[in-house]
Length: 192
Image (cartoon, rainbow, N blue to C red; front, top):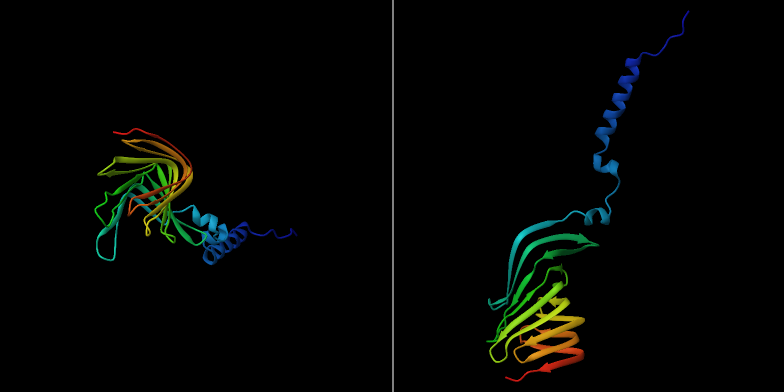
């Protein structure tokens, strides 16, 4: 008598049953492993093309505007941050002072701190009634949008119709138009 060989269809049914059981018990996400902060950081929460934003004071007056080519918000270590491409900010003074325009190639927004760090070819300018256009160039500028305060510890160049001034570091109160150059200040003055 010949020994009984298992039927191949019984093995096939057992294998299919095991696959169906696994498919019903676990989702593909479970099989890939737990989510980590690294995996979450790769996927943006919000993606905006052609962004335009306005912020107002409690009195209803316009404080600043932000226009950008593109903004991508993501969460990193529990904080929401955003990459901003081609940001252009305009800060309006509460008095008759002219507004400050700030531009850069990119920026990083921190929504918890209400800050925007402008990076790469940062330019700020204002058309002052007495001194004409004042332009400030640097590589990195941290802006507190609530306080309307800008600062950097990088080299800066300040130009106006009256001359050129270079320095390392800058503090600027954008609402009042007060700019303080911090160290290694050198200038060329050209009186009109």
